[in-house]
Length: 387
Image (cartoon, rainbow, N blue to C red; front, side, top):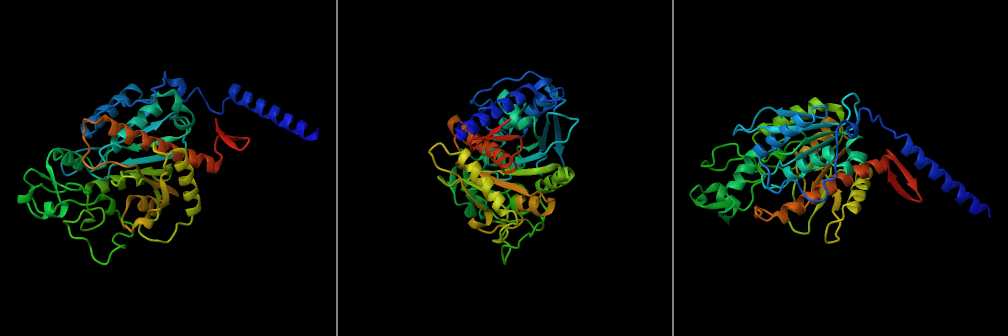
């Protein structure tokens, strides 16, 4: 009898708790994005079915800024790339009067992850215009999105897509062999004219944090892992450095979006990448990653592999290590859903699959963060419910 009374009282308390939240929402709706414009449910389909390049991103982000100037701020990073392309940052705030926890999402340091810019732009569309994403994602955080860091390489690899493939080292060393061929992989930028031998710098090895600590000898410049002659020699890494330092401690959570080019190998990774030494908050990062992997189960039922980045091989000078070690952001992840090399651009299923997996993983990491801090959550019979 006593146990039944306790269960009854707990149920009554939960009921009145839910009723209170519905009647008195824990946000200032006079300033929130939900009140400032009409929102809609965009459904599960993508809005953009073509792979983005720099021109598409400028067009879409400018349109967002014009439609919702109260919530959208478009930033053009400097310097520009060698080919005079712009790196665009999209800042989204549901309430310009209040500073909220900041989430930084950066995509496409790798010239072969064609779908990463689409993933981040589609995420922005959902945060701004889809009622299902207002709570708990848009109204609770400030978002800083950089869809395309390496526009030169995206243009470069797309321009070669119809050619036959040869080994990337042969392609890099032999100018004659490049006629109507493409390298088997291209992970660098395009820091010179393409008729020169062995050009390009791997941007994700060009950051000034334990730069080159992972090797005894610098990889040759023909290698896809060439880190540049010195840290921040690439304009793309310079632009990122300036921007993220300007943001400073406004960033509480950072995610780097790339692609895994090996089928059935998809990852949620965290620092460090330059050393096997675990980070001081490694258990927290592992727990958040595992939570996200369960929430973002892959279409075939598999889970993302979650572990420290260096478990797959040490890489120094990476973006995630720089954000964690220099900027001091404690929660930093690298998300790598499967992405085929040189995908068929007319196959929209490939693009849609990658984009949906990426967005689900990103938001699941945010949910994992919320769950770890119990931010805006109540526990109902062992299950966390967000409000």
